[in-house]
Length: 251
Image (cartoon, rainbow, N blue to C red; front, side, top):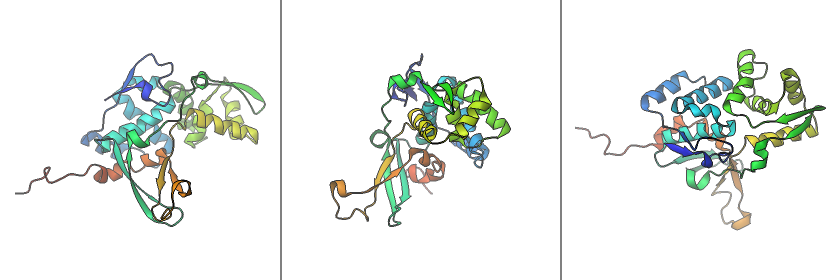
């Protein structure tokens, strides 16, 4: 499947290629994935998912990390669903009721609108030092990520992604300024992370019990992060790719 880079969270800003190729996993590949993916190691799992994408298209390494995060989600979606829909079940935080919802890629998955100006980076003051930010591609991100894969001084993937946004020759100083951020520096880093990584709008789900007899603005929704859906994708395969009587005909 060829995906236009204009359909990605970055809008394809600065790419010199028009499409990325992504294919669903086969039965063999899915079994190998489930056997080999390091589920108890978030850093190793993220690297594993990038390598899975790389087998589809080497241009993945030249894509922004914000786009690759989406493509990891998309590859898993097309593996479990032919029509780009997905069944989810969440627990209402108010009443505890289990809520089932069918998620449609076309209807429910929306990107926050990207401003081309932010893709050019910025100059920031962090920890008393002046830095430039970058929008890291996979190649640029891995230069930072490899250090943490090797030494495990930081194991929070979001924190490593934040460090990778900052350009500079003093890796230890950048790490210290990010990890030790206080007050407005914390707000700055959270804003940068939101701009360059959290590009998918959360999905709104409404509890039928809590919203009984409520209309319009009275209704209260539960926000579901798209990232959280990735965790159980393959465990829910039977729900999202059911078979009918035409598939198995017993004698």
